Picture 1 (cartoon, rainbow, N blue to C red):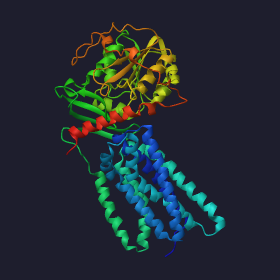
Picture 2 (spheres, rainbow, N blue to C red):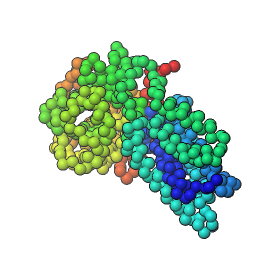
Picture 3 (cartoon, rainbow, N blue to C red):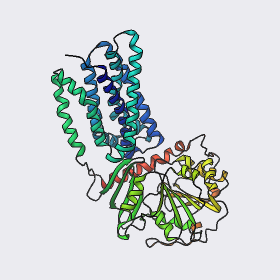
Picture 4 (cartoon, rainbow, N blue to C red):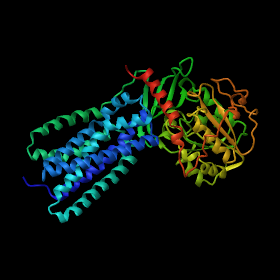
Length: 518
């Protein structure tokens, strides 16, 4: 049989390089509902991608030395890599259910070791085998290696943009994994058929099976958990779900939830026409904000389902919203009855704060997920940027974890210490409940505020008559071991790791307890 030309081999290198990056992005995003999208998750994904490729480079070099000039070796390596990529989303969910009780770091690492590392090992084997096939003389080895790695890397760059900006946000994770896997093995499979290799029947039977499975909806949830919307994107997995409020309210009301990476972000009552939150803690934000008069200008960083926007509207405030993920804006309008005329900018919050020419009376930071806080927003430099766009007497409000004591509370104590160092007169408002289930709301004002002068009420909750009853006694806040957070030393993720782990574990346990089919 006539051997393929260089162009065909370079084409396979291009597809392999693109598939590597697709595998890494899909693998990291598959982790999100179980382990979040924190720095630890991305560090694990990057490290294991490099580990898989390193192992593949070594094994590929050894095999290319043993099977010199073997084109069938190249084809089979690509076929196996493609098959492993195709099955990755089907095995990952089961694997992560077994590792969910591990720590955040170990759970992510062990899960990726099992479902993401194997295809990357086989992809890593491709380049040294290709170099061996392309090298006819010793003097041309360097040129062959340079061409293979350059073309492979070019494929990786293009696939990264394509997957990150278009494919994953529009088609999720399962179908892209299957299509990329098929793309990786399709041409090598044709080449094996031309070589009349009998074993090629195995992948030919498996491909249709997983292709069909990728488009069949997989719903592991009970009928009480009604998914109205689901997609993957910049924040990870976003879902809109109607489900009862087990353990959240006494009367187990039916609510609509915005769920990001398996973490409840917004929860509103269906019988209230989606206007009011089911969570009692949500009443504390507008109550604290009501010390400002009608017509005050507010910048809300982080939209969620739009509950806070509606509350600010009831107070008569003029609100601008900054949201980094366009999907959140779309679902808040489509599923949570947010006014589509709300002033919303799709941007990173810190970037918007730096470039806006407007001034505000209140800046609300409602950007944290249970597993990740955008730490660049709550640094000394971030607060200095915020002060520049605050009117005299203005205030910042920051939604945060409920932990304030011990090791888990070090992150909150560091935010408090950083606010104080920035010149804000800071109070901490704690919503009802234990540390593990409550929220903290930092109130950093440029001038002292009289929080006796509050006026806000929603139909489902008793009016908060004295907000000071819910303030944390500053004498109990020991900041000796806390840090002043800085852009130059991003350590907040490390500080809140234990708190994030606890919150993520609690949410996963909650949904598994009530809504996953047994």
